[in-house]
Length: 191
Image (cartoon, rainbow, N blue to C red; front, side, top):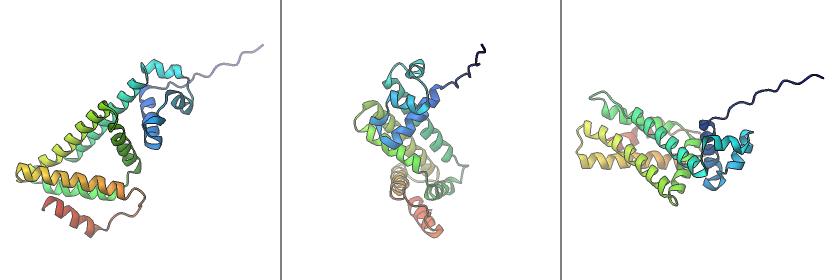
């Protein structure tokens, strides 16, 4: 009698669980993030989940941490500028966000914002991300010679534009014309 060699199952790591949970959050909201459902979608047992997480709350905390770290890293990298190039960098940032259609990113953003309405940990994470986003762009405005008050106001305007556009254009595939993008960027930056 011959034995069929068993095929080793691929390991489902912690990050795989977090990515799957974030996908579900974007598609179905926080109530859709269930251990059993995620395990079924990943083709693993719930035991795999408990190897990496104490409970669902630990997964939720890992999701918040992953989202926070990714958003903060992204805005910090996008708001670096050589001295004297701050306004150009801000205009590039506005142009980039005007062109890029990241539907999944906006779905996750909106889901996290909804989650934050009911969960103190999500609220704290969202507040931290918003603070860093606003401060990074305000720092560029200050470096370009704007007063602290004006820098804060322009940063808020930039932020409102980027996220407002993302919510409005979630179904649009056509980017705004270049002259419209330039006009808006000049309004926001005063450049």
